[in-house]
Length: 290
Image (spheres, rainbow, N blue to C red):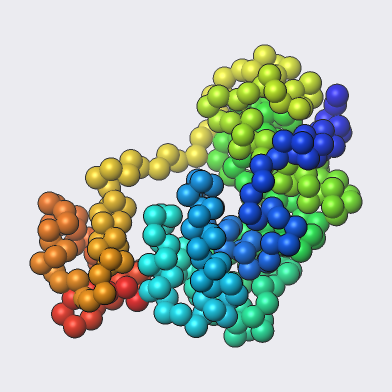
């Protein structure tokens, strides 16, 4: 097997081994694809699946979400983390409703104009919802390419242009094959070519992998910044405040918020951040969701 055989080998492997996930169903709507991509950013699949089902049952179209207060989107986001994504998704739903007749756009530049939609999400929607031919690259796909093509154990910090060029060089010309390859390479990185314990013994492209052929050397290159520990962080304190706001149907008072965290300076900083981000607002002497 050589490099040119990688796309077909991965497509065939995915056809046999790919996980059955809601957003991979043939009739899954473009709106569902957009919602799932927002939810999957830095959130495990297992936590996304039930929340996605609840979300689409409540808001099956962008217009349904746009008609609800943004605070309801934040409340429904629950334990997915990074709740600003809920606000961004609500704003995107309003934009889709008002500017695109309630239809999720198809072309990448128009998708990029939506709040919260970056290059990866725009390409993912265009490819997985509409079947267009574009390279789609995430952390998992970058890892596979780093190993199979560049003989590097890790991909290092993201390099948007170079990463897309690497993926484009492998992408089949046929649209269906390109779509299948895009999802297959990400799946391989998620379940086989993992960061810490790659399962090279069951990898369908082992014989073409430059890293394996080089003896699986350690990585000594640059690395992306490591996220700070959650426990004790401002993120944790923000989460505690938001949990209180989600559970309450009346304004949460200062006295109630003070009881959530011992460090008053950190608590005040977290609350100020939520207010500045639009995730909380003052009301009737207390605080509520927007």
